[in-house]
Length: 407
Image 1 (cartoon, helix red, strand yellow):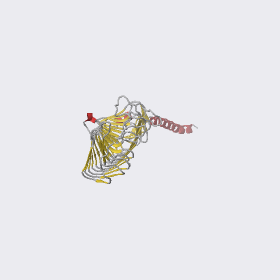
Image 2 (spheres, rainbow, N blue to C red; image 1 turned 120 degrees about the vertical axis):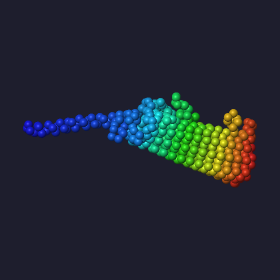
Image 3 (tube, rainbow, N blue to C red; image 1 turned 90 degrees about the vertical axis):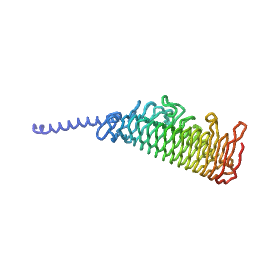
Image 4 (cartoon, one colour; image 1 turned 180 degrees about the horizontal axis):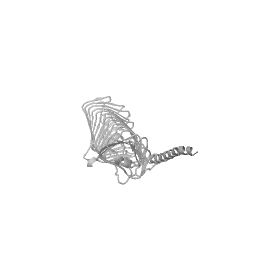
């Protein structure tokens, strides 16, 4: 019996040690938030601080924050693999702040729930990711809810992005942030992804606000209310853009240009329940291609900007192209449109293809213009004192005799 005890004692000790170490290992695993290689970290902040350039941080579980989570690694390029997990920011002043270095984000969800106005829509008006001037953020995949605010460099090649808004604002972040999905004051490049902004009340923010440099080469953009509000440099090479300004929303359709420059080379732009698919106040717009549709009203309306159309297809249920002046810049700036190429069609029975009024000016040297009993242009003169516009036609193909229309 004593010999048996001597044989069993080492075995029992080994089992006990194994059990103890197993318990310790499980405890360490349950407290792990992120990993870099085989090294465990109890928080993302610790992993951010430890990461070397070229390394990937892998999130191990869902986490939430009530304050700012900062990444500040000057000269370092790090990847954050969300690993199908979720980062939730519970306050409007809490978000992922990339202050220095380069952070690539993929494969999971980051959302802001701190300013939720509607449980049904989960509308938020706070930033979910903010990029500082000295930082770069690359988003390749994932799901994001809230505003992406960029002051530095941001590239988006894939992912799903959503925000909804009411007319309420978030203290400390300015008007360009509330209810906006993309707020860019730096350099933003988009080559893919699905972007959705829903307006829950009249007067909400835009899907995108740009006063920096924004380039879009692909993507699916949908908004109820304002589309892209631009006062910087905006280049659209392709993409699908849809705006439905229903009774809860306000504003013009796809692009509301408040200065700066817009260059459109291709893409599909569709607006419903909106006065104009593209609207300009002050600024310069150049269109060389694309398809522009408005089921009820104008494809383009300029009230103080300069628009050059060198190609594209424009189809409207209302007037196709409008140029006017509405006292922009104290009444010294009036809309001007030049058309050298393109296809223009109105499907309305009493609508106008080219409509210049209140000192607006349209110059046509080429293009194809089609209407159903529509005049080719009109000059508005009415009892309110609005002044005549100017339309000059020296080229192009018209299927209906053009003339002056007075209303």
